[in-house]
Length: 317
Image (cartoon, rainbow, N blue to C red; front, side, top):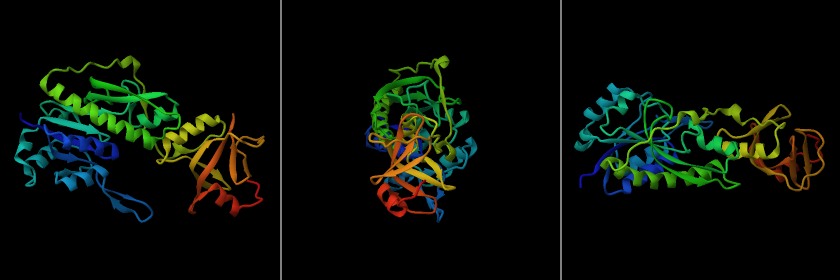
């Protein structure tokens, strides 16, 4: 049996799990990894390679990192690179997982079997850039993974397979992303041979049921204390570690690194008011209160609630 030749598009940890599954499948040959360019991170702005690039380098897979995908550049990369295997000239299928760049129709059409996308929601619900984060922020009880055939729209292509996943009450972005990556890997590996053989056919989405998510930025993490404690906790679940949730204290931005709905709160009358008591920090919400377990004041190191209180004893915040 001939191996299915695949190009894998991806960037983040989720995509690394997908790539590892493809590499472990004896019937698949991953002949090229396309990922986002290296980017500067941290105070020192040191260049950081994407997780999937690190795995591809380890496995000796050719890597392509365009700023923007164009069919002419794509064909040049395939045809001119001396490192590519000869089998890459017979590429059959693309696989995309949390890539981060728009793939134009011209490149989708370059693959005889098209491109399959492993999307982290039950499409057509939560199309777009932040399906995991949005599901958590909205307090959803379940989500899932969809294997769809990519088209030029925003997650609008026909569906090949789906699997539903329960969201635990204290699930965070990090844990849910990891869970969905493993399930997505299993579902994709089951779907590919069925699709390649023609045994399964894509089914169009019901566009009337579609909902969309947005590209997140730092402002999305700002806490509105006029919301209730559960809503703010869900915001933290979805936006930690990035872009993170934060508030303002004494004209300084404070990252709320670890929080939970308060269970043993003191009497707090004013919304947004901070209370320090028994080595704990509480902030009043519209309904209930949030307990801050770990925080980081702008320009300072991260602190536990106890460490913060020791530094600001008897301070009315």
